[in-house]
Every structure is written in structure tokens, then in C-alpha cells.
Length: 285
Image 1: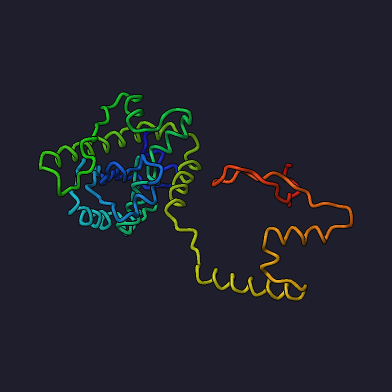
Image 2: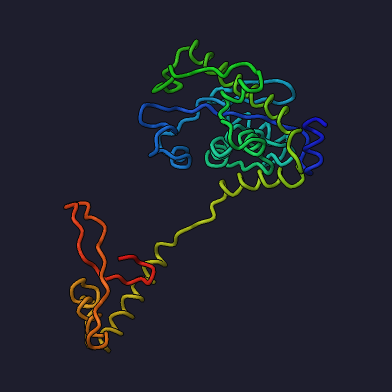
């Protein structure tokens, strides 16, 4: 079976579109930096899409930034508003699919990530495009370290062409990896929807924090604490103070019993530890 047979078996469309975005990066603003995780990087004000490589119908094309929106609209005309009539294939979908979603308001219905497929086949190996290209005997992945700190408008025509060739090569490697690896996936009816679901969960904004409601609840809780403290003859300040709360705990214990204590973790300021109440049963000390 080839990759189309596997897609059909999983109930996916058999047309594939392989994409790869090229983006601005510099010394500090880089996915290699711990302070720039994928979501923060893609949603940053510094984000700049500097091109899109696409392989469709056996042709690979690089589109300059000013043409990205236009070409995506063409694909929407062909495959549906959210490209639901094709499978979007990406190496590291958490990055490129997030760009599609955040900057172009497109959330493909079917996304398959060659990185996830490779992880399914052999979790212990490197799933970097460069390493997988070497493993499968494909054309080597290129290098664009020279582009660090360069915006699209800063580049010469030769540099833009070099960036486009680099991107297209990545797209072709991803396509070949997909075609080689997908037929190796066992139980595709289960595994492919699961891979797609994993990416969809990453794109989906599941958590929304209602700050106004939180402040309202905080106010109600503080009023309730004040009410209970007053009924007991105390104030919230007394109950929340470290020393005064310790005295209250000691007074609540039967005569002769002591509040269990433990050493605190060292203070960041002084580096010293001190004795504090051991409030949890599972605490050691």
C-alpha cells in the first residue's frame, strides 16, 4: 500500500498539501531560546512570516510574504474554508499549523505531522528533519544561519532566492518522508486520527481565564473570611499572620501538645532555613 491507501483506510482525504513557513529570527528571538516557546514566538509582535513553501500536485513553490494570503485563499477555494478536503502535511505542525491558525485564521481539519509519525515509528531516534533526511537517504537539509537578524525587506534578491530554495528543499524532504513513513504506520485507522487530534488540541484555545469573575470571587471570599474571623473574635490580619497564626494553632491543641514543625526551604534572599509549622500529613520533618 502507498500513502494514499493509508489515508483512505483512516478515512482521510487522499490529496495532500505540504507546507513550511519561513520566519524572522535573531539572536534573542529564536525558538532555540527557552524564553521563546512556540506559542509565545508565533504570537509575538516580533513575528514575521518571510515566505511559505508549498507542495501540491507534484509541484513545489515558494511564495514571498506579500503573496501568502493570496495563495492561501486559492487553496481555500480548492479545498474548503479550513482546507477540509485535503490533508495538510507539516514537519513540526505545532509551529506551522499554529501560524496558519493565528495569522491567517485557517485551522485545517486534517493535519499530519512527519515529526509525530517518526516518533510513532521509533520514539528513541532523532525526529529533526536534518537527521531524518540522512536516515532515509534523501537530499541533505540546507542551512540558513546567514539569515539571522535579517527581515525580508533587508534581503537582497539573491538572499531571497536562497531562502526560497532552502524552504522548498525542506518541503520536498517532508513530502518524501511522509510518503515513505506513512505506509509503515500500523493501525492507521486509530493512529492517524490520534495524531491529528493531538495537533488540534494544541491549536484549540481550551483555557480562558475570566479575570473579572476571579476578582469578584476574591472579594466574596475575603468578605466571608472577615465575617468568620469576626464571629470568632479575630481579624483576618491575625489569622493570616505567620506568628499570630502559629499562636492560634498552639492554643487550639490539647494541653501539652505542640504544633509539629519542619525546616523550611532556604530563603532566596538569605540562603537560610527556619522552623515552620508542618501542616500537611505528608510533609517530612
